[in-house]
Length: 334
Image 1: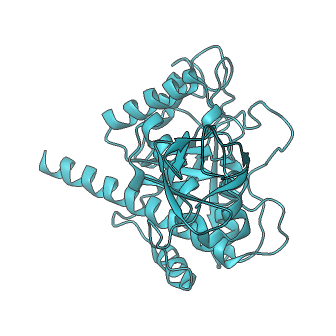
Image 2: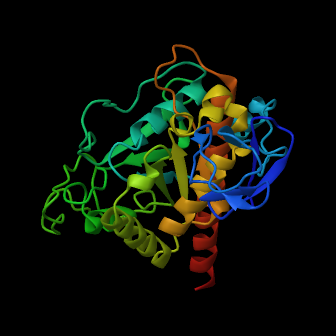
C-alpha cells in the first residue's frame, strides 16, 4: 500500500491499488489524481475544499543497499578481475529497443574505469531509428598501454516493431556465429554461406552474459511486439544457459527525485514500481535489474554516477564468471 497526504500535512491517508483514488474524511471518494494535482472532492467531505494531494515518493529506507562512499573498492574489484580460465575473455552482449542508451552505457563504463570522460562507441541523440547498424565489439584499455580488461562489450542494432535487428540474428550472436562488423539486415537473417557467418566458433566468440538495456522514461511505451522479441531472445539465452540481466537507463529523466539526487535511486517508490513493471514485462527477476545513469551532458565525472555504473558492472562480471566456470565444470564432468 502507498501513502499520500494532503497539503495541511496533518493526516496520513492510505491509497488503494495504483493510487487510482484516495479515501479521506468521512470515506468519500475523490477524483482520480496524480501527485501534485489539484483535486475536487466528490460528495460531502465535511468542509474540505480543493486541496493538493502529494504522494510520498521517497522511502525512509532504501529497498536495495549500495555503498556510495566506497567507489574505490568496487573499482579495484573490476581492475583485479581475471577469469579463472587462462586466455578466456568475458563477452557481454547488449541488446534492447532502439534508442535505449546501449552505446552510452559502454562509454559511461569506460569513463568510470579510466577516470576521465571517454568516447568509445558512437552515440546519436537525434535519430529515432537504431544508430548502431553493425556488430561491434568494444575493448576497454587498462592503465598500461596495449593491455585490456578481460571482458568486452558487443553492441548490436536495436529492436523495433517493424525494423531493427532480427531475433534470429541475435540468437546467432549468442552462439558466436556473427563476425565483427557484420551489417545487420532488418529483413534477412545472416546466411551460413556469407563471409560474416562464423563457422569456427571459439569460446571467446560466444556470449557469456546477455544484458537487456531499457530506458526508464519510455519503458511503458515499448510495444508488445518488441516485448515479445525481448522474451524470445531471453528464452534462447536460457536454452544456452547464458545468464541475463537488465540495465535501466535514463532514470533521471523518469524520476524527478532521482534527478534531484542520484542517491534516491533505491529509495524512489516510482523507480521501484518501474523496475517491478519491467520485470513483469520481460521476465527478468528484480534482483537481476540494475538502474544506472549514463554520462550524457557532463564534462567531468561524478562519484555517484560511477558508483552505480561500477556496481552494475561488478554484477555483470560475476554473472559471466559463474557461467564460464559452470560450463567448464560441465565439460570436465563429461
